[in-house]
Length: 224
Image (cartoon, rainbow, N blue to C red; front, side, top):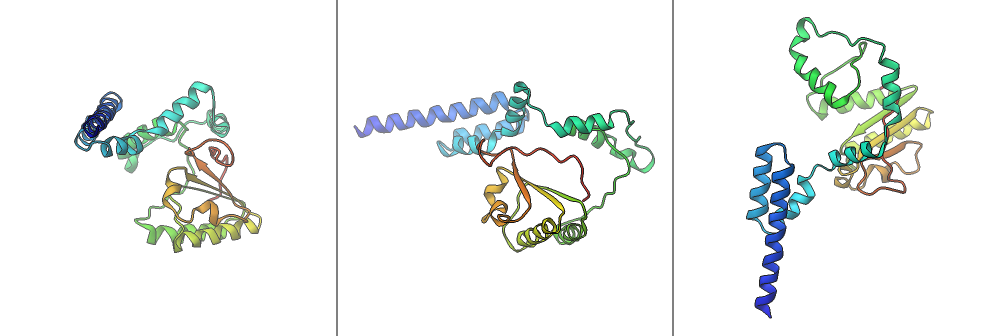
């Protein structure tokens, strides 16, 4: 009996490894990524396929394709295009010509026209970025829209919670989007920390559909 169970377990493990490796071979566009996941799936029985199904599958692309096939669209995306489709995008000239390839890449990914009149500041790390962000939140008068992959519940995260809650309390429209998977890395979550405040918070591509976990739509206008 023990021998039969061992053979059965080995067969299931081998089947899962082959299934994961085959999926990576057929679905991964990057040969290096495909090879890496194939080796992991075959070299580490059970653990390898489990890691692949949890981390190796691009569920964002699948969800986006499912939305397109169902006819679902982001309303503000269409409104944004309609508002700017008559404007010609600013040309890349002079010192910014080296950004031509980056612009081509962003045009394909974002699919919204490039607009002029924006201000851009580069920050090297959180020590530089967080104070500037908190200052912008404190000085906002109309709206704040914050999009982040991970919103930690540590001291820095709580500083943002306090600043966002205070802004919403003084009448500023505050909306926060947190990635559905990235939210799982934080304890407590931003949703729990912002409970009771006037801040609107939503998940981007939630792990489970329905209820309060609705996919967030991007805002139509922002101040900061």
